[in-house]
Amino acid sequence: MTTVEELYEITEKISDNLRNQVAELLIQALNDWRSQVNSIEDYSEQLKKLFEIKELTRSILETEMNRLNPETHSWELESITSLIEAFKLSRTEEISSLINYISEKAVK
Image 1 (cartoon, one colour):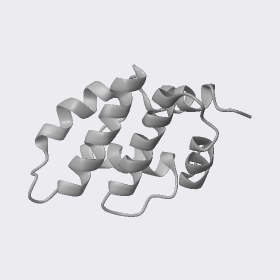
Image 2 (cartoon, rainbow, N blue to C red):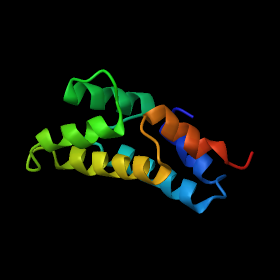
Image 3 (cartoon, one colour):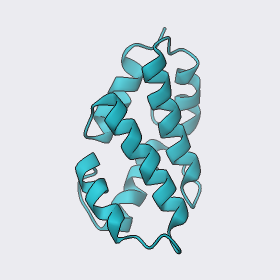
Image 4 (tube, helix red, strand yellow):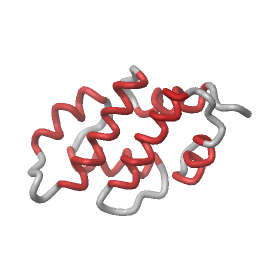
């Protein structure tokens, strides 16, 4: 699962409510980003570029988002908040682990 469309498709196959909630938070994070993102990888790269980081983890995002001015980065903050909530609910730390968590129990 790499594109936003694939993420939408997989949410329809998820039977676990918590996983579905996590998937919906990730979709919300992607949709709330200021510019259009076509893939989860694209979203990750934009986050890395914004914060000038090499690794994208929940703990790094929680620290780095405090550097953003809410008046000029409201969309980004909204997006990052949803992503962090998805990390917390899934008990994951990295984006790849989050994707694995979402797709793990999807009905085939």
